[in-house]
Image (cartoon, rainbow, N blue to C red; front, side, top):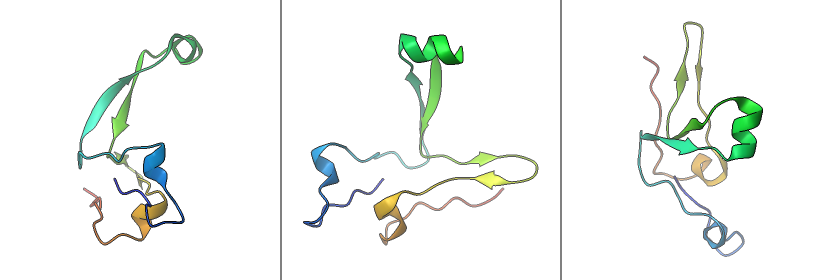
Length: 75
């Protein structure tokens, strides 16, 4: 969601930020990964996984420090 681009780190050279808060799309896997996993697509985006016992989500690098954060609230 947020990339470091302050002079020392220039992530936008190689990556683009995900612009869709709380949206998950299907990502089609390559044939090699499909053969290994038996899946042809995976969910990709900004989401959290909820189970009966716990909730799982992650933030990466710049997202930990930015003021514009998308926090997940447990259900």
